[in-house]
Length: 341
Ligand SMILES: [Zn+2]
Image (cartoon, rainbow, N blue to C red; front, side, top):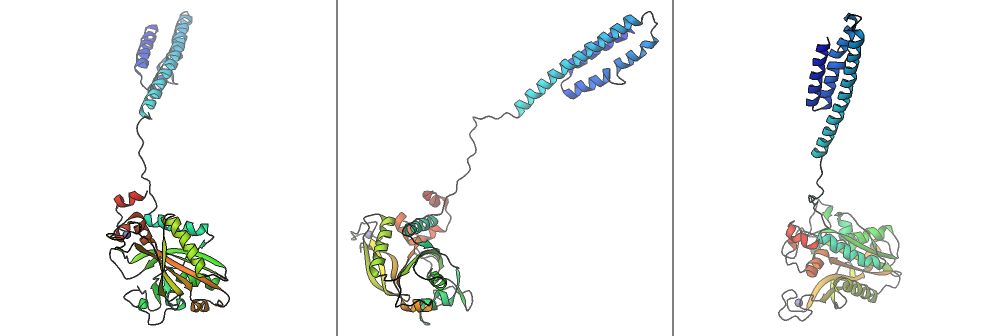
């Protein structure tokens, strides 16, 4: 029996040394020391050993059992350390590897220009208002003093949705919507998309306008001139010169078209292609709000007066950044867009 015990002990030691995982060690523990383990069975058969030999055999059995338990603990520590090292190796993070850069988006140049212009007027105490892109004929034309036969109402210029609704041709209907619902004094800017049947280098069927208007008592053309001069100098630089030319719009009287000194040739004209030699660039339309418009919204034109202006956002951006073709704003060419990041 003692011989069998020694053989079992040697086998167990050899197997433990080869074990590579905690589960293998655990299997060996069950095999030798489990309830029906090989060593456990030997201990149980001690009864069959002649009484005079029992103390010696029993002592040896116990010694082997304790030694084996100790070996199993040692083996467990060893494979656990191995497993931990392998896990660390497997999950290793190389902090020197360059990260994957997330591509950053940026605001579209038209949006940037809208924000820049709106900020100038907000600094002057104007508030921002918006209105629907799909308008009715009344707010887009009638209330703004467009006569029934005005050419702007023609299918050639206006995208009609049906007989009563259209895509707004300007941001001016928001003037009507604000004045219908509020009383003066009002200082409002209206950024938004507008739509006209037009498509070439400088005209797009969808473009953006910023409308502004101010209504109060005793507002004069001088106030309009002061506000626009300040705003254009904020936008194009402190040296910017302005020129007001008499013009006509149904919703203002008197009306003016406003030019700024050419940004490209500095007003020199002659060979300049951008201003076609004139030294001036048309930048916005403006005027004193027509009494008929006040009548449409229930204001007393004897008591209040006001001015209004509108400018094309794409035109401002094209002049500011010297962009030749308005279509580049909508072709989504990243080489173009990245210049405005
Ligand atoms: Zn010029």
